[in-house]
Length: 114
Image (cartoon, rainbow, N blue to C red; front, top):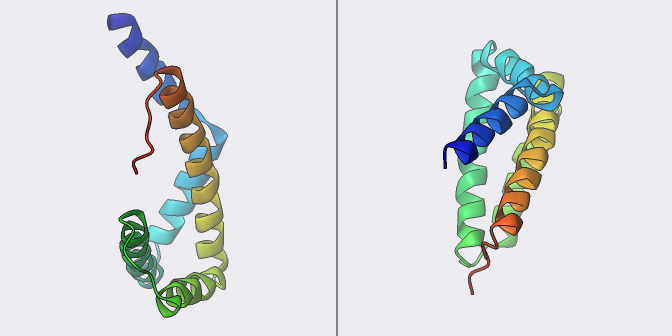
């Protein structure tokens, strides 16, 4: 078990040291330096998370709800700092998802629930 934890720490360090994570982190800091933008981003993230949770729980999602989230995203994306942040976050989360998929596959963890 010690070897597995050692390798997990090395993986975490590799992720933290990666270009994709550091680009995301730099943009996150830029957003935080602008209080109004940070507030708008937090509002968007909360609404987006609630929307995604609803979908994951197989609760009905209306077209208007989806349109609202898309509208909020479009508004934020007009700000160059916000757009870079959202793009960098998406890139990092894609790498992170790939890593977790590999771990799930290696351990034969079935994450599909029906």
